[in-house]
Image 1 (cartoon, rainbow over the protein chains, first blue to last red):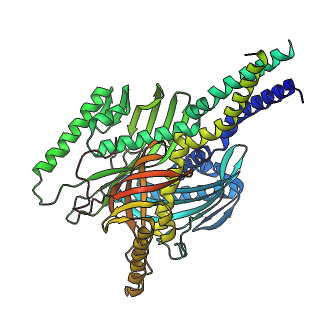
Image 2 (cartoon, helix red, strand yellow):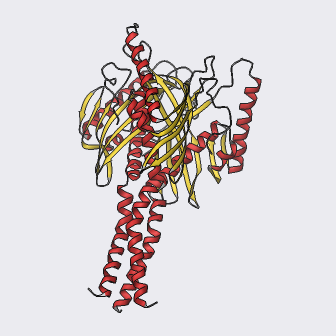
Image 3 (cartoon, each protein chain N blue to C red):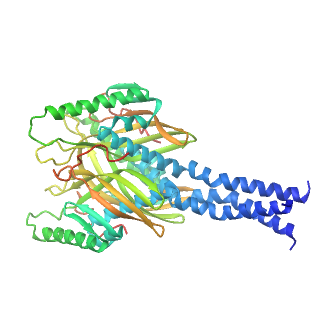
Length: 183
Length: 183
Length: 183
């Protein structure tokens, strides 16, 4: 190998690595994946509480499984229907309400996200607590809590829930039974 | 173009990209911006609850708008005054308190941050819930919750609130009226 | 210096920077450190609430100090023992319980993380609130809150608590006394 061949090889390899390096780093680093996953979970919660079924559905992969107190719902379309029905029931309850109180709000607060990323897959654990203000003073009151066990998948650079299971400590059948669900 | 010119060009471009690349990536990636914004919001909350008006004011841009139950306050100096007055009222309430209880604490817990970054601007949505321990056992009690709709601006590499509006489900006038405020 | 020496130097420096650059950036950026620290804190909380003493201990540095209502516990092994004893007391309470209720759960929710990184050290402040469901309906009830003041250390690329102090507003001796503990 001549000296000039070595120079050329070095230059081309350096140039190639330089051009591809930072982008790959930005797209696939733990912080970048975690940031996108945190944002997805926050978007899911806003949409759920504000009865926006389309946005909730859009946070799930097409063939995702959503395991709730209603059982296991499979597929993005079925998940949209599930949330629509739940939203419809909320609206009906509000319409029928004769308490004289203004419509109450319910909100989920998510914390403690344990996120393990492996390429285009991720395992996620979170805590949730729920608040309502369904009382004469509309004061905030905590009413339930639990955790979630989630699997996520990255498709075309976007993260989605591929499996989401909700545990709820208020419910005998859906409360956590085993040991530490994280790691 | 001679072979050695090609080598030189390759080398210089690679060197230039290498030196500038990672820093640009680190400063402007979604994860870096999100990390800085999350930290700013956490600093704001600590300062607010611990009656540190200077630090609260420092999280707002000079011409920021802060929309609270006191109305719309404009500008960092006016925001500092607003927080100082509120802190002063807290201290007076504590001084006048004759319950025999030790001073109570109030704290805001922020979750579910939806953060959309576009260059030096960002739109942010968060949830908040408030706890107090103003009772004989000093036990923690949730008392109110809501969400925020924020605009942020990045100046000289630092993020600031440029507009912050607080929604509060305890208040008829300040509760959320429309659909999903996130996206 | 000959022209070819300049080429060689440029090439080698570019190649070296390229190979080390992105990794250094990914490992040492604020977002990467913050993401790892957030994940560590979430893992700590899951392990604490689900009585997994080994995992709790693994989040502390070997010579860490853990300052709780039990006093200051020094060293990872002593911290493991402390959590084991606490877990044992929880299991005994559940075993002796004659209320007829199913075992109750307690959970800590962490928010508002202010994180300042300086090389392989970090200072961290967080808020916590605690929920339990120890009532006939197993409904979620908030019962206490406070903040933490933490020091962290990075060893071989992993973050650990080197000092963790828990403040608790329910407790006269452990409630916050001074001004803003963040910055």
